Length: 350
Image (spheres, helix red, strand yellow):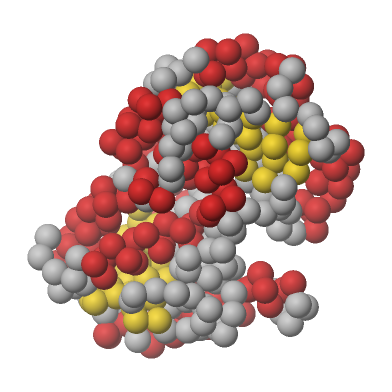
């Protein structure tokens, strides 16, 4: 692919680019942005003013929305996202391709642009998403797993290409000696299910370290009721949100990552980040999990918590060096960028 495309990238506004702690989509956008610039493309990032990027930064708001909301300066997200999309549409003539990483509810606005647009679907595809996909066929879509893409294709008559999320393996120092604890990393929410992770650890007689945070009032209530009473600092420890260095230390020194989701996970980047550390994954078989986890190589999965408990001993015996090697073969960020450049080229030429 020759250099020279003018690309407008539109990330969520929840965190800066790159995110300081939690922010899977924002981290993917950061890797995509930096690699596109490195390959010689002209990239404009329509993000928050506190983002750090090699691309041209077009700030939509001064700081990220989580900071605004924590300081009670903002109450709702939508007006700011509306402003971002408006800014993008105004500047569309300066780009060959617009690439949106925000929610599908903003897809109709992209249809107003004369510049070809690509929407990456980062979440579970709902009925509303399928309705939008069906009614705005002029906006290109891609999924981040074949499971997720199939949910969008159902009833829409569209063929949705897939580009797996990528990880920068060079920033994760592997540890090929298994640790003595289990790890959970994710939002403190019912869907991510830290309670299930605790149950697995207790059944195995192993300590577990939880990292992450609640991001809304419903999740805060879940954490206070279901998780907080179980934290004793010994068998169950909680370290809160973590930056990249803290995340790497947590994952590389763990015996396994426990991923007991209770929703149809569209990808699950934290599974790949654990694998980058050489740490195998024990997951619940929902959504994309069966695509991301190579059974018997990078981890195991089961449909219920009871089955996960039974598979933990086998998970702990996996070759950690092979865990990392296999994950890097499949999920390196240059491979992700190659996939998006193919989609950009087809759009720019159409």
